[in-house]
Structure formats: structure tokens, C-alpha cells
Amino acid sequence: MATSNIIKSIRNLRVLVLHPRDSHAEQLLQQVRRIGCQAEAIWPLPERLPEHADLVFIEVTESPSRALRQLVDKDVEHRPTVIGVVSYENPSVLEALLEMRADAVLTKPLRPSGVLSSMVLARRIWDDFRRSQRALSKLKAKVKNTQTVSQAKFILMRLHQIPEDEAYSIIRSQAMAKRATTVEIAQAIINADGILGNISAKTVDLDKTR
Image (cartoon, rainbow, N blue to C red; front, side, top):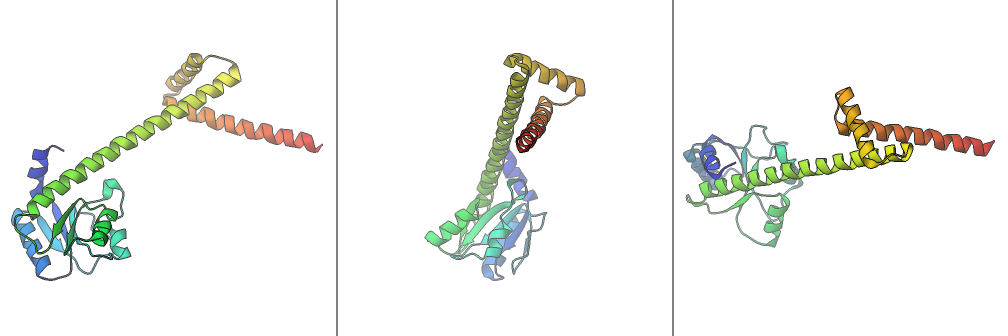
């Protein structure tokens, strides 16, 4: 998402504040609402985050509860932007922020000038990370598909004593004939070879017992 779009979209965010009900929580709610966001506070911690939450402010202490850790332990596609709210900075708090994969941090006492900036930067980091994970997933899938097709080619080469380009041509022609992908045909070849291999092995074992 372009930087300008991130800034423009801030007002449309649905924000959740997970913080004990005190002056800090009230001040944070007021500032977020002043920005133009829909905001609500929930305390004590819910069992799960509302699905509509786009961005969550969470109080992070030296020893965050297991429930808090599980609350934000979601896959990239379903995880909201997380901003940690801390009273002080020490190794334990910083470690907790890293474990929770916080996208930004606010320190108490809150200042009016820091909330919007933290939201914009957090959304940028959150968006960049999600896009990088999507790209990584696509790359992994591409590598896996290439390996599947290569394995199927070697099976055909071994069974029919043919060169690699001819083996791939067979896979591609079968894919076109059956209106399937080359990966689907390759996987079918691998599965069939595995079944035949198991049958052959069992036949050999039976012969040995006679």
C-alpha cells in the first residue's frame, strides 16, 4: 500500500484498546477518536480479538500473560496491526514486545503528538510484512511445484528411458488433454509410482517367504 494511501486510510480503521480502565486508557481512546477512528476499549482481556479490529493497542508489561500472547498469535492474513503500550523500557518488556511482534510502541504517559505517528508507522510496517510474507509464500509454492514436476520427469525418464525434454512434453500434453495443470499431472505420476513401488515391494516379500 502506498504511503499516501496508508495515511488516508487511518481514519477508516476500527481500533481496539486493550488496557486496564484508567486515565491512560481514556486518554488513548479520546486521541484515537479525535483522529476520526472508530474505537472501543475492552478490559479484562477477551478470549479472542473481534474480527473487525484493524488495529489494537495493547498494554505490555514485563510478564505478559499467556492469554495475551495467544490473543495476538495469529497468521499474517488475519492478524491486526499491534501497537504495544508500555510504562517503561527494560529488557523484559522489549522481549515481550518482540515476541508479540508489535508493529510499534507507545510509552506512557501518552503525548498527543505520538499516537497518530505510531499508527501510521505501525500500519506501514504491518502492510510491508504482510506483503513480504505473501511473496515468500508464492516463492515457496513455486519452488515446491518445480520440484514436483522435476520428480515426475525423472520417474518418466526412468520408466521409459527417455530424455528430460520428452518427459516434460508428456506431462504438458497430458495436462492439456485433461485440462489440468502440469503440477497436478506431475503429482498424479508421483502418486502412481509410489503405489506401484509398494505393490512391487510386497510382491518381492511374498516371493521370499515361499
